[in-house]
Each structure stands twice: as C-alpha cells, then as structure tokens.
Length: 121
Image (cartoon, rainbow, N blue to C red; front, side, top):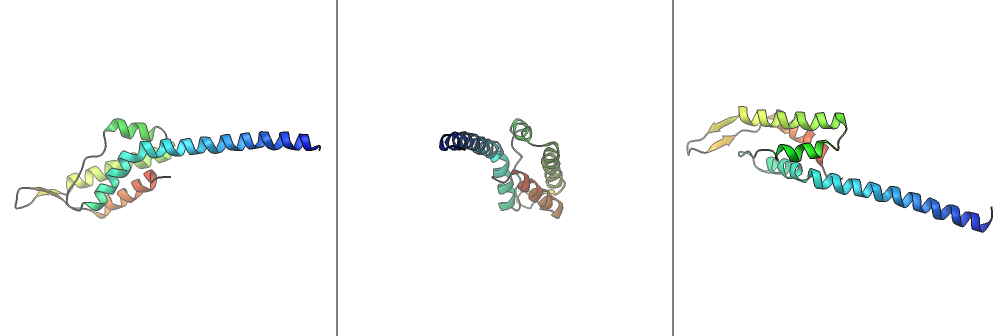
C-alpha cells in the first residue's frame, strides 16, 4: 500500500474509534446523571442507622430504569421494594415520640444489590 492509502485508512480508523469512544463517554455521563438521586438515597441509607428517607420520586427512578436492561431493571425495582418493605416493617416509636427504624440484614443486602446497579461508572 502506498503512504497515501495508509494515511487515509488511519484517518478514517481514527474517526471511527474516536466516535465510538465519544458515544461511550456520553452514555456514562447520562447514566451517572440519571443514577444520582438513587446513589444519594443509597448512600443516605447506609450512613443513617435509625432514620429512613423515602426513595426518589418514581419519575426519576423510571427515567433511570428505562436505560437499563430488563434484568438490571428488575434488580433495581426489586431492591427498592425490599428496602421499603423492610423499613416499613421495622418502624417503631421510641420513648421521645420519634419514629425509629431498625436495619435488617435483608434490607442491607438489598441496599448493596441496589448500589451495585447504580454505582458511578
């Protein structure tokens, strides 16, 4: 091959490779932006032992899960359901009149599973 053919080939190969890498970067950025509310919620649950905070609005969760595969979507939705039900079942009122929640191993496992699905990429 001549030098001109190699130059043209490498130019177009560089264009194709650069385009593919830019698409990957954009998808990661979009994923991280959509996952941010869930990431904050999971982090909050991990740091607060006796308080509970409702998950992000269903619209934000739906926008995030729409970008996932069917299997990942089921994992996220099931983990949120388990966390909500476990915290609801372990809710009690302490002597001061405050609502206190008890963490359970099942809720912790679901939180870890959810973090695996929403951690930043």
